[in-house]
Image 1 (cartoon, helix red, strand yellow):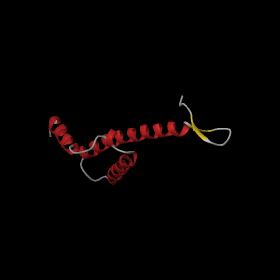
Image 2 (cartoon, one colour):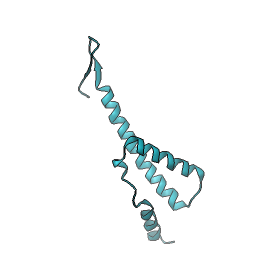
Image 3 (cartoon, rainbow, N blue to C red):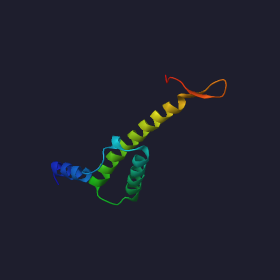
Length: 91
């Protein structure tokens, strides 16, 4: 199989797949878990495994970004001396 044929095959595998950045954390994590199970099973051809690995990398990065954003928001919640919760500027 020629290199251009492999590229076309990988592109076809990714058709209809939502961009990672458009997914919620839960949806991205669920898809990532599915990819990990698929890769761990060792079934499927090499082109599919490479496409899945690339997609998994994008999903992992997206999940990490969403978690970092959530952590910043949580850290922005502070407790006032009177016990009330307030928001403070995130540094």
